[in-house]
Length: 300
Image (cartoon, rainbow, N blue to C red):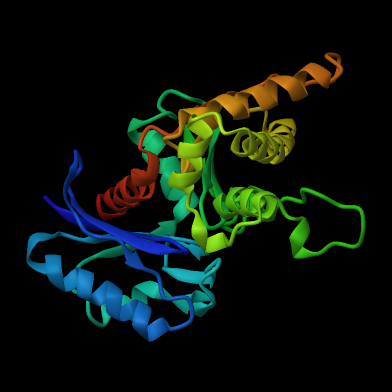
């Protein structure tokens, strides 16, 4: 049986025809509308129409705090038009197959739990770095959703505080993928639209000193958040997903930063350092996790 999996991101929408073993057909990325709900729905309807005759269901990964049992969005992250919307109800007017929707960070964790870096891991967390920073927490070999469906929203952690709180102090504003590029363009006096992540890592892999200095600083911000997560959860493994999850240099610098930080902590008080790896499925984690969640629901 085949299914349509859709990964709604803050910047782009990805989709694929899948079965429970592989991606059968991958569509081109589509830019995510930032303001218009109707334009957004029409994109999803168009994707569905392309595959309608080939599928048994629709599995969706999306940003925000979501009641996955109903499809209701308490909020939609960067997509404001999804706030207080029941996406399944809206889509059901056009889509005539079973539909499921789950938070993107939780989808990434489910993919890695199913067949990736979290297999056989009792306690761990997947950190998805993209337009925002999300995550999925694994406790006792199972996805932990929390009391209000918001477990794993680690981007909301406070990362810096020397004055009254503002959203600028949250971890997401220092650790999302755009922050790395913003740091580099500020350092080099470039316009933000002149570079992308692939371009930056080409420079870094060529040992460009400015790119490496920025990467080192960026990994320091990530390390500070990881130390906080570990102090609370005492997990054995962290898997990094999202746009940079295939960059081995990124993992190398992040682990160096963690080693340096742990070396400064009084060993009498330090918790164990978690293993940090890259997600097995990289940018496909959300698609695969959305399908896994869908299969779980339709089998019940």
